[in-house]
Length: 449
Image (cartoon, rainbow, N blue to C red; front, side, top):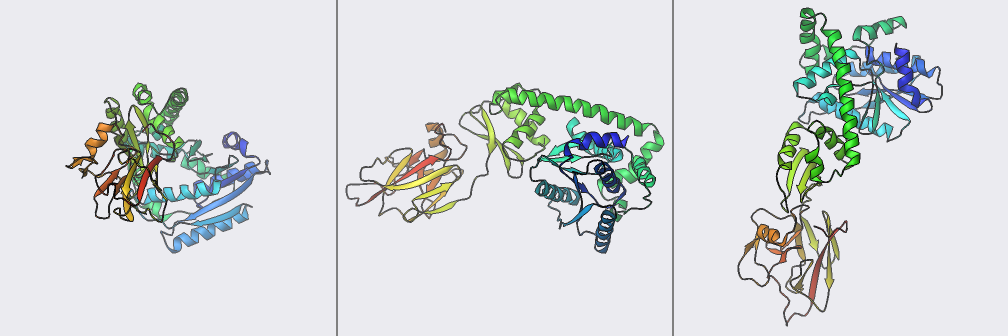
């Protein structure tokens, strides 16, 4: 059975490279042996066993790394040890370790189509994954994520043991003369969620419902088939429509939206993001409302945000921090999606939206450029009282996103809200000896802002 699976999975890598995630445990050892057996008939494929040392278990980790190196060498596989120093960033140590490993796989594969990563996940792992994700509210794509072949962030992962139980994997090893393998002591601790399922809950379920193991495996097959159908439907819908139009999302079936958003974020350069339920619920809510110049921003994850505005949707870049601009020594400044320039001109217009002209002698050499602030006010040119910048922007029909720069004096007083209004500060008059005009342009050349 495994030889047929392996031939199908590995056929496109006969002249490529297969990296095998190799801890030295039973599953990764079986995966490595399966790859090496296949390479015997396809010598053009390069195989390398990759061992990650997370340095979480001291001397035990070092012993496992050395044992893995010796095993790989004995079976004729190249060996690479990668040191990882993992810290819990708030999502748990397991999640941090997975993210660190994925970063290394991305570095090793570097977008090559003839390279893949082979992992030793088996059917029992898939059952545990299904139950864990079911309790977290996952959809069919999430529940069946440990597939025989999957692509994450451009890395192709192959799992030749996906159809075998843990017991069958160990039988496979013994049939090949391997009687012992490494056992990670942390796998014996029930503190980790996956270990708790494996060691405490699943044995109880299987004792009470002996048919559950085969039943859940069958359910996984059916769920994966359903997931693939929905994913393919999402791909077709995405390619046939305009994903930057709010109507595209409004008209999409709710079952498609999580998959559509995943494609959208990937194509907008955000990587392989699994949209959280809160982001999807907020998107559903906002699609039923009208949004003109007032942008609605929907957080997806750290550093990734959607922006809904003027019937369009896009990924919102993070608002850049304030920048100090010495306009006398620096003729231009890039801030966010905008380029600001200073020009000395003899004939000036003090009230333009794309430019603002000032008496150079009265304008501080250093100005601060940043995003609009809540409740910020200024005295517009030609007026005597302060007005709210938000109202001025709305009156002019200037979009809230991407935010247009606000230029301020060192003390914080607004001298120009780019594309909205300039202030009454440092006006050009008959006594002005030198005038300077500040100009603001969108970097992408789009004037429909």
